[in-house]
Length: 432
Image (cartoon, rainbow, N blue to C red; front, side, top):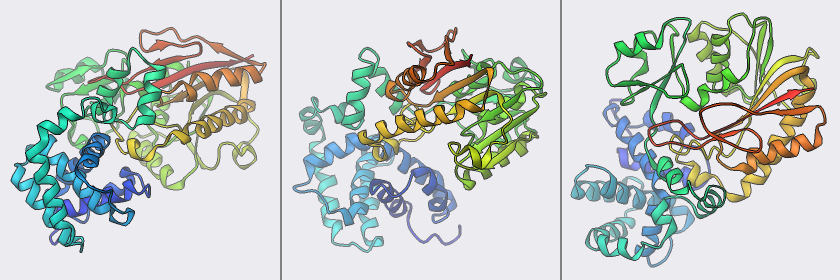
């Protein structure tokens, strides 16, 4: 963009303010925000927004010590600038004087020159008192874990021996993992062409690169030989026990990574039906399948409303990757720390159970349903399946024998691993 309307820090503050006000997700805001800054600053804008939200609970706890009184809700953009300033000082290589001056200057761009003095004073005080402030906050859970208190408590309750590792993984940058189409090329051949790449330990289709890159420049990407997909998500399709001639339902299919993997893994499926509630998300599914040279029957609908989409012909296999808290993929979506609330979890679990109950009649006797979420909370996982099994007499839990994850009373739970896979849950159910 030749004439950006705002500096990168002013635009970052506007973008972050919308997240802080619970107005939108960072993913939905990022592309339009990048269009408003200079091309050379787009990478920095992304780093500032993602990084600030990754550490927001910790940074916010510091701001609480530095401000005499909280800012008003209408000044969430100034709140965002404070967070941005602290983030740059503590987590980037930007010189402190440059981080401070450019962040303060953004107040004028936001038409709030009164805040310049406040911002300058708070950030300079932090530079002077940083060590003593950190020492004072050693017992602050939000400062130590960079997680909201509700989520920290639930992780510690459900995973007391793994909580610190989960927090650390959530605060890491995510690995850049690819899935290869094994019908097109072998993993060993691909590894030999890529420097600093390694095979994923659990998925036979995965390769993790040392750093993120422009995937369109990778050999075979534009031909559909490769897709970007975390290792944990790559485990879904093999669990389906696919065979030629089967009819398969992908009940919540966007963005289409698993849909594509199903079709890659068994090219002779009779049909794959993909459902998605929002048309804009189905666009992404269509684009992904088109690049892969694959096709599926895609329907925009509420999966719960069978009369709107089901033709009465039962499915041999169902993949239900249910909408969830996404607490297993926080490192990819750090705005979850701000957007998700404790009160969201019970309604999500109720919605997940409803999807299971409503989709079950569409499965053939003898068919398999794989229930999956990217949550690490048993409330959305094992407990949902246990409740479903109590109500559904013709459903049987099939234990998953695998070298990944941790066995639960129902299904297996993968916890996020630093440098490895995301957090995910899988459970296999057979219809009697």
